[in-house]
Image 1: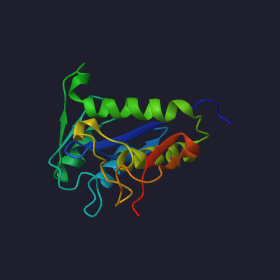
Image 2: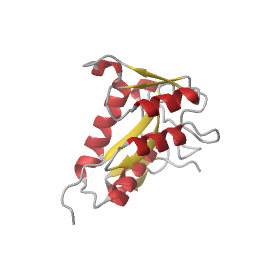
Image 3: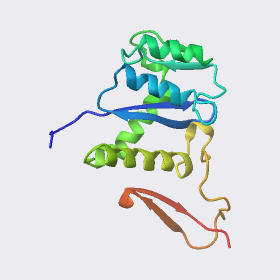
Length: 172
């Protein structure tokens, strides 16, 4: 029992699709952790930056020189936006406010494992069960392929013990 512990969640958002990728969760975002994250992000088979030319990021000191050099070597140019300019990252700011308001402010994670589960469940909800105004209200990747509109009983799926809900009508 160490008391309250601060965890850092590093995520990326592909602006064209608003798809979120959680790159890592740690209590100590040191240089070794950031290099490992860069390796995962630029992986040729399933890296979140695969086919991406630019990575827009804030001026946080956790984005070390080695992290930026690694990204450049792998073909993704890190772009840092000006100081005191939160308007440069509205999608990231929106995602942070959503995950806090809809999920993390309502639970007390007991350790890294429960925090990882809560974050991964929320990201799955965000992608497959939550409408997005920035995309004209469709789902990013629907979990149900065939949904009937306007007919039949309404069903409810729940995540995290009912904290996140998704209502739908199944096709016959």
